[in-house]
Length: 128
Ligand code: I3S
Image (cartoon, rainbow, N blue to C red; front, side):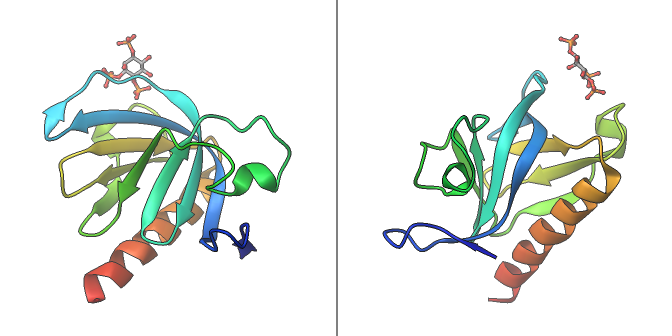
């Protein structure tokens, strides 16, 4: 695992570029708008950044740029999007406050790895 600056020793579990769209906020449906985000799984959160401009690994660390948004995974639910998108390899994340996201990769293996990692965090939090 990658370790970030000592000032904020958040362990980044996974980071990478994914296509993302928010489809609901507070339970209210939103119009889809797909875009590329730098997604970081760290601690109990999934954090979204604009595409990093700086060189890795600095850009991988949550302190190096301001996140666009962050999702608390406690109590969240993850499944395959299936009927929610015509694309393949899309996962659907629902959070307790009713914010919903679709995450997509062209690579099936990539989205499977993300799904396992996010589901692992959700499960760990469920067991706490
Ligand atoms: O679920 P939808 O409405 O079919 O989602 C598609 C639309 O958001 C579309 O945008 P416009 O309606 O503004 O043209 C997007 O371009 C598509 O990518 C969305 O569908 P997919 O199946 O790609 O998630």
